Length: 211
Image (cartoon, rainbow, N blue to C red; front, top):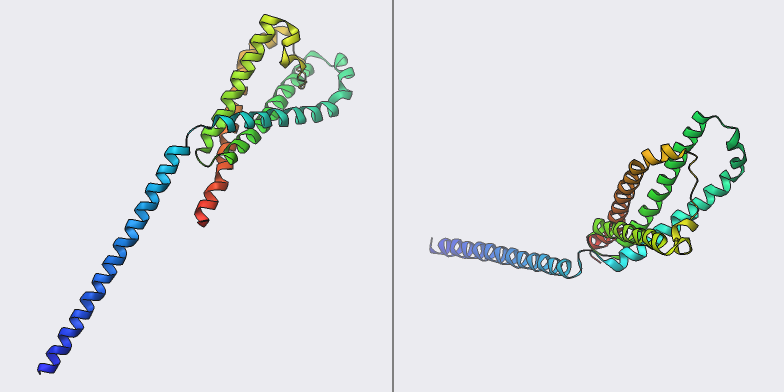
């Protein structure tokens, strides 16, 4: 009887030690996970936010892609310019809308590429890097317009950019100009931020793999 009690006490002690070891291991794992979270947050606090260098180079990519696409489309449609004089006004308006849509698509693709590059260059906050690309584009475009206004056409850099022409009357362009500009700004903003998020996804996959 005494031997059985000793065996029972030994079994109980062994079970208690096993439970204690499991609890201790769980606490160690929890501390390690907490330390990993703290380190990741510290890196995000230090290197997160807008990276203006990535935004600038992303904007350069956006402009390069836009000009490349504009050159390709311009070469394809160059043969139709002589025929526009024979097109009725209604059809000319339709062509003008098509040209506006073409310019919008070109800029959307360009800014998506620029946002992607900026997001890929930065480890954190991909959408903010896309926003940086867009802001750099807005600021530099405003400076280029101001330079052309105050210093003459010789400094008007935008005048040398060949985008598809918009065959609309002056009155139509005046009334629709603000709407078109607003839509272009909105589309380029959304596509740049989306491209930044996609570019950042590469780093998320690497982090998930644990490399």
